[in-house]
Amino acid sequence: MQDEDPDRIDDAPEGPSKSARRRERLALQDLAEEMLRLPRAALEGLGLGADTWVAIDETARIKDRRAMRRHIKRVANCLARENTEPLQALLDASEQQSRQAAARHHQLERWRARLIDEGDGALTEFLDAYPGADRQQLRTLVRAAQRDAARDKPDAPRKLFRLLREVMDAAGD
Image (cartoon, rainbow, N blue to C red; front, side, top):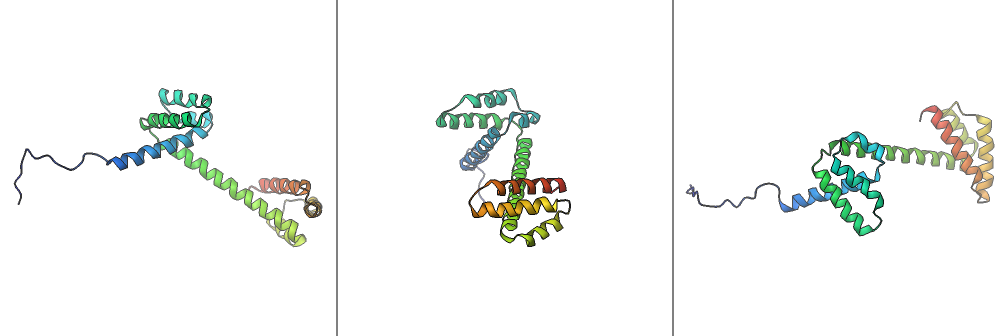
C-alpha cells in the first residue's frame, strides 16, 4: 500500500484532453458551416441567442474565403454557448430530405431511361405501377424521346421526365 502524501500533485488531467477539445471545436465549426448554408427562415425556430444572430447576419457580407473561415470559427464559438441539439436535428432532417429527393430523382431517371431504351415493355410496367397515368400521352412522349435521343436532342426526354414526375407526384411517390 502506498503512503498517501497530501503534498503530492495528482498527474491526472481534469476534464477532456486537448485532442478531445479540438475534436469538439472542429465539430462545432462543421456544424456552424452547415448551419450557415440553411435559409434564415429554417433557423428562426431554434431559439438562438442574439450574438449568434448577429454573427449569422454578418455572413452575407463576407466574400473573402479566409475571412469566411475566421467567421465560421466565430459562429462556432457562439454555438458553443447554445443548445445545439435542435440545430443538429434540423440539419439531420434536411439531409434526410436531400437524400430522399436524390433517390426520387434517380428513380425518375431510371424510369425515363428504361422507357426510352425498352419502349412498350417498360411502358406497360410503368402503367402497372402508376395506373392513373395517361397511356396515350406517355406512349407519344416515349416515341418522341426515342427519336430525340437518337438525334441527341434533349427536348422530348425532358418533357418525358417532367410528365413522369407529375405522374409520380399525383400518385404520392
